[in-house]
Every structure is written in C-alpha cells, then in structure tokens.
Image (cartoon, rainbow, N blue to C red; front, side, top):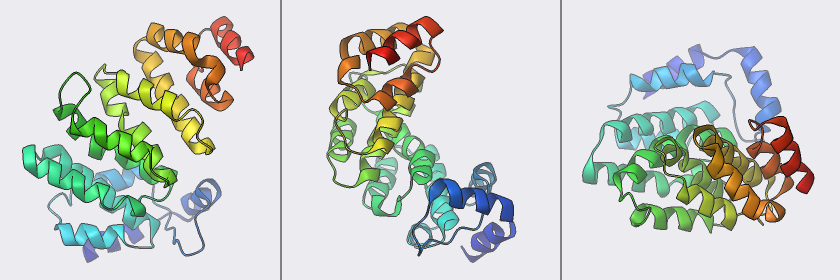
Length: 233
C-alpha cells in the first residue's frame, strides 16, 4: 500500500490539481494531489491483489486520490470475483459509502463496483440488487442517492433500462441538483441505445421532471425534439 501511495504522489500534476480544486470544491480537510483518472485506473490494475485492510486504509484517507485509488482497486477485485466473493466485496463497498464523498468518486466507482453484481441478478430487475438500489435511493446521504442512479449505467449498457427509469421517476423531487444531473445523464445514456424508450419516458413524465434533468437527457436528440421537451419545462 505504501508503494501505491508513493506512486500516486509521483504521478501528481500541479495543473491537474488546480483544475480539480475548481471542479470538486473539496472540503478543507481534503488533500488533492492532482492525478488524472485514467492514470489512476491504470495504476489500480497493478494492485488488484491488495489486501482488504489496505483498501480500507485508502478509503479512510483524507487524500482524495487515495480514496479514489482504493475504490478503483475494489472495482478490479469485483470484476474478477464471482458468487459469494463478489457479494462480500459489494457489501464492503456499501458499508463504506461514507468514504465516497464527492461526485467523481461516485461516478468512478458506482457502476464498476455495484454494476457487475447487479448484472449477476435476475433479468427481470428484481432481487437483492434492486432492493439495495432502492435503499440507497432513500438515503439521507446525497452520495448514496447518486450511487443508486449511476450504478444503473452497467444495466443500461446491457440493455436493461427499467431500474434507471424507476429511480429517475422516484428521485424527480430530490432537492439536490447533483441528483438531477445524474438522472439526466443516465436518461441520455438510455437514449443513446434506444431513443424511443427515452422519448416515450419523456412524453409521459417531462412536466414532472426537473428542468436540468430534461436538459441533460435530450442533449443527443434532434434539435426539434430537444426544443420541444426543453420548452415544456
């Protein structure tokens, strides 16, 4: 683990750190090194055998990239695990979502840690995985709710849109713009794969959706369709 920490610091770029400070607005006790996400992903692939207690230490760190690296190592472990071992890793993640405390950490981990496990479940969008998503969506912790939405990207990529549509509808009155943005992002991903599913959902629900969700969702639609939905909101 100390080798990983040392490598992270060696990969830091002052210019990237300045960018991250602007976009992440980290709390005062958060230390940013300035390491690019693709660089961290590559680094994590070399540490997939890291012991769980070391991953735990990384997740509890106040160095932002150490938490991110711990999540990426966990994602590597989930990717190669199967059955009960995969479920144990998912439980480990779910018990530590308090460490997943900014949008980049959510977006870099939710669909690659929870996603493979969700895809292991029944194809009818039922079972433990979907109960977990519902539980996260009902959490008071902002980042749990965003995890629920972003985790469904793995299902979207597999052509399973129902859980995303259900969560977007459930969270439409959420008070946090970061949830509205995540919902719009996931709707846009659905539209990339099946535009008619997106259009049908918007036809039924557009007036009840946050404006920012609609704007994100329709970015890839034809100009006339995009304008029609945006004007409705």
